[in-house]
Amino acid sequence: MAITWSVLNKIMDIAPEILIGGAVDVVVRGEDSWLAGLGVTAVRDQLIVLGILTFIVWALESAFEYALKIRWRNLAQTIQHDLRVETYDHVQGLELGYFEDRSTGALMAVLNDDVNQLERFLDVGANQVIQTLTSVVGVAGVFFILSPSIAALSLIPIPIIVWGSIRFTKALAPRYMGVRNQAGFLNSVLSNNLGGIATIKSFTAEARETARIESESNEYRTVNEGAIKLSSAFVPAIRIAILAGFLVTLMYGGFQVLDGVLEVGAYSVLIFLTQRLLWPLTMLGETLDLYQRSMASTSRILDLLDTEPAMTDGTVALDDPRGRVTFDGVAFSYDDGFPVLDGIDIDIPPGQTAAIVGATGSGKTTLLKLLLRFADADAGTVRLDGYDVRDLKASDLRRSIGLVSQDVFLFHGTVRENIAYGAPDADMEAVVRAADLAEADEFIRALPYGYDTVVGERGQKLSGGQRQRISIARAILTEPAVLVLDEATSAVDNETEAAIQRSLEKVAIDRTTIVVAHRLSTIRHADRIYVLDRGELVESGTHEELVSHEGQYHSLWRVQTGERVT
Image 1 (tube, one colour):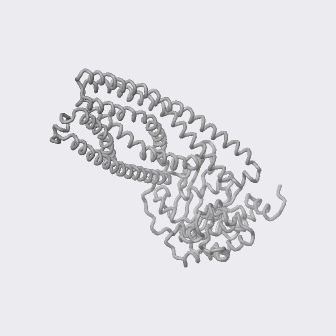
Image 2: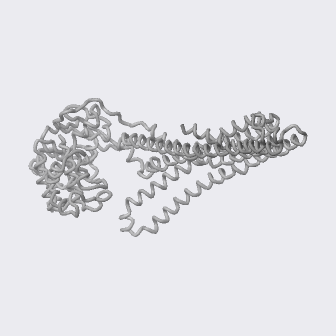
C-alpha cells in the first residue's frame, strides 16, 4: 500500500506540468488545441476545464501524500519494533559467556542505534527511491509520446546517474560500516563510565574520563568526516549530467519548435518535465547516504541474529523436581590450558544443606554456573535428579533452582515488583510471606511507600543488606527445589547476617540448599561442607570433622577465629 500511494502521488505530481503545457497550447492555438479535439471548443471553456483538472490533481496529490506518509511511517515503526524485539529475544537466548566477552554498550548500539538507522531510511529514503523510479518511467513515457528524438537525447544522463550511484554506494559501504563500529565502541565507553560513576568520582578521575570520551568522540567524528566527504561529492557530480539532459531539451526542442516540427505546448511540457525528472535525481545523494547508513546498521543487526548459541536447549521436561544435585568428574576452563575445575565429585541428597568453601578463585562460583547451565562442563556430568542438565529444558532447570547471587541485581521498579519478579502472578500475601522469611518485611514497611517504594536503577536507593534480603525473598517466592546462595551474606552486617541465618534455617527445611561462603560461621550447621582449592575438591565433611582434621578448612577456620596462622 505504501508503494501504491507513492506511485500515485508522483503521477499526480507530474500531471500539473502536462496541464501547464495544455494551458500554453490553448492560449497559443485557441480552438485548434488538443483539448478542443476532445470536444471542448470554446477557449474559455477549455481554460475552465484545465482549472478543474488542476484542482482535482492537486487535491489527489495531497491526499496520496498524506496516505503514503502514514503508510511508510507506520511500516518503518512496525519493522523497527519487530526487528528490535526479535534481535533482543535472540540475544537473550545466547549463553552467558557471550555477554562476558562483550560490552553492554556495544550491544545497546546494535539494539537501539542500528535499528533506528533502518527506521530512518524506511521513513524517508524508501519513498524517495520509489518516486524517483516512477518519475523516470512516467516522464520517459510522456517524452516518447511527444518527441521520441528529444526523449532519446534527454534520457542519456540517466544511465550515467545510475552508474555513478552504484559506484558511490560501493565506495560508501565500508566507510559507514566503520562509522557504525566506532559508534558502538563510543557507546560502550559511555555506558561503562555511567555505570561506574561512583568510582570515577571517588578517584577524582572526572577530567581524565572526559578527555577519554573526547578522544573517542573525536575518532567518531573523524571516521564520519571521510564518509561525509565522499557522499557530499555525489550531488555536484550528478548535477553536471543533469545539466546535459536539460540543455538537450532546451536547445534541441527549441529548434524543433522554430522549425514547426514541435508544438509550443508540447515544448513547454518537455521543459517542465525535464526539470521534474532530472532535478529530483540530485536527492539521490541524500537517499544513498541514508541507504548506506541503514545497510551498515542492518549488516550489524543480521550478524547478531546469525550468531548461533554455543549451547542448545535440552528436550527433557522436569515437572516435579526433588532436588538431588550431582557433580560427576566435572572439569571446566574458561581458557584452554587454564583449568578452573578439575575432576569434581559431589553428591548432594534431596533436602540437605551443602556448603562449598575455599579461597578466592578456587572455582566455587563456577560450580554454580555449571549447575544453572550458564556454561557447560568440558568433561564430566552435572545432574539434577539424575538428569544431565544438558538434556533438561533450560526453563525447567532454572525454575527448579532459586539463585541468590553475591552481585545482587534489582530492576528499576517497586519493592513488590522485584520480589515477585520470578512469580509475577503472586498475590500480595505470598510476597509479604517471602519477605518475612527473608527478614525483609520490617525494613520494607519502614520505607516511604512500603512495598510500593521504587528502588531505583540496580536498587541504588537501598543499602547492600537491604538489596540482599530482597534478593533472598525473590528466590524464596518461586518455591524452588534447590536454593543456591552465592555469598548471600557478604554485604550485610553481623546483625543482619544472624537474621538471614534464622530465615535460611526455615526455608531450607525439605529443600536442597547449596551455600557458597567465605564466612565459615554461616555454614557451620551444613550437613556437609566441601572444600575447593585451585579447582580441586580437597576435603569434605561436617564442620566438626573438618576442624578436627588439620587441613585447608582447619586453617581457614583458625584465620576467621583470629588465630595467627603461618
